[in-house]
Image 1 (cartoon, helix red, strand yellow):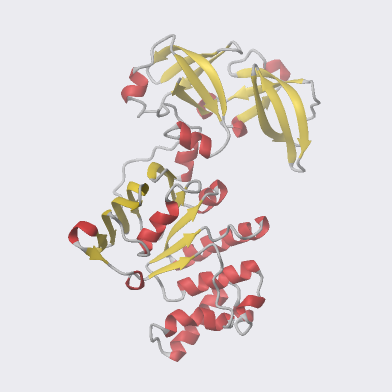
Image 2 (image 1 turned 90 degrees about the vertical axis):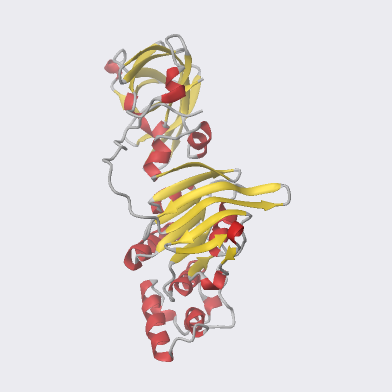
Length: 388
């Protein structure tokens, strides 16, 4: 079931000539016994972008990353890096992992405990028979980039968790890989270190211009780091787009609900006219005119006729407090404050809207008490219309 609504942001862009994909995954499948971990996934990844595979545990994202790395052999499909075919089972093609020139960082730091920081980072160059002076230059340059130059002679295991992960990152980048593969690299770090490492990785990626394929189950990580996000579900590609597109214009209820909370309201469609739809929120007696995007055609829209039951959703962050005198204005509804939690930068309110309860974060200067009625404004441009 696809949505047929627009978003509060202008997501459409003029048609432009897209560059050829740098890394292409075509109808790739991988089975483990009766389980199809990757079920016909196709992706086009551009050069020098951060491309994220996002989904819950068991959705196939790590298996797909391992297929790209050459650590697993696909059962079907093809994987290409620029003009080179890395895997094509039907043609008997499979390039081993060590010949793909890809760097990989795992969830565990995987630093070698018997080596210093310098030796850890230098090792990939040594096994590639790079000259000693060049090794020294490249290692120290990379250590400076990750902020570990002064720790070069320290045993790697004497560093903090975040520093060890930077060693792993430097080691994966020092030989200038075509692609950097990151498999949940931040999940073992505490919240503050994760934020620091997200910024560090993004900064390095921009400085070096390396193509990154990033695996995570964390929406915050995916959205803050990525140029494009592929949401996976049970081995299949559920939606592909920019972070803004998949969040604000989800293609299915699964994507909508996986990527954050939504207030879901029952409504009745009263009219479709040109580029807009009129709906009546059932238990609030509120009518809204919702704009339809230019591409909202096809079966979902054609099945909707006046009197049809629909769902209207809005992300809680797009609810706005309005003056009490605004009640009665289009899109303004009365809400009852049930509970309040102070968060420092604001307050978290549990509010009742008709028969619905929702938790929303509102500015710190809003003074309301439990039991008080406030007025919330529903922005039609931030709402999504779904068949019931």
